[in-house]
Length: 154
Image (cartoon, rainbow, N blue to C red; front, side, top):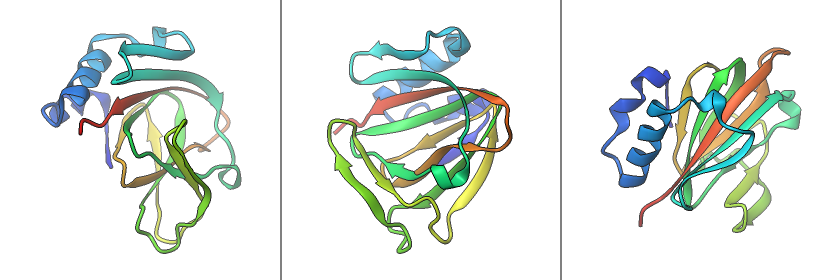
């Protein structure tokens, strides 16, 4: 998992063609102006899910990971708690098995040793081995967010 400010995202170019495509789009477009829902950047290789919400209490959240996509989760406005633990954490337990249609496995919300971060107007780049928890309440403000889905090149 990589956490930072959008102004530093350029540093992660060169990892893969699809990540480069995502970073170029992020840095050269106004993500706040994107319509809510899905915006296709490069077919199923790179797309963005844009959302506005009030984050949920921790006990309503869950950890998840993906097998075919990397997430670049971008908090555009507001604050939200994002959690991280490696998928090998022995206290992480599957609550919903892998769903290939949604590319997600869900886990319990409270594994021991998980790192919790208050993310404000920044990004979190999440790899497949990173179990991550998102949309958790830091306060009662509205969160503006874009989740960039980047297909793993095999």
